[in-house]
Image (cartoon, one colour):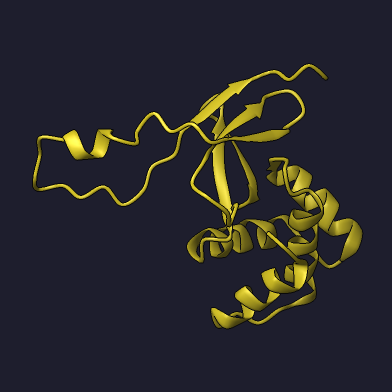
Length: 139
């Protein structure tokens, strides 16, 4: 996302009130752009900015941010949800470090021609995601 103000404007334009907790959560997501964060990490970082924040507020607002397409949710080891701001640039996929949460965009798309070859004409693909998990050199 290009700027925090743009992120806030998108949120408001979708009809949502910008509470102190929501602003703090958006700031945390923006400041950590490029990394996936667990709900617990988001809660801790948001609470340090806005002490009135509670865990249920984080969960509710992450649902809203997913609905309005501002955050990307991914499951690591099919159990723990991690979140990051959605990228607004070109179509791409991600390498995700299971150790530190760093994400790296990859331009390669293995599904580029796949949707044109699906035999079922009664199904329209609207989106897809491709994520590779592993460990970066730092871990």
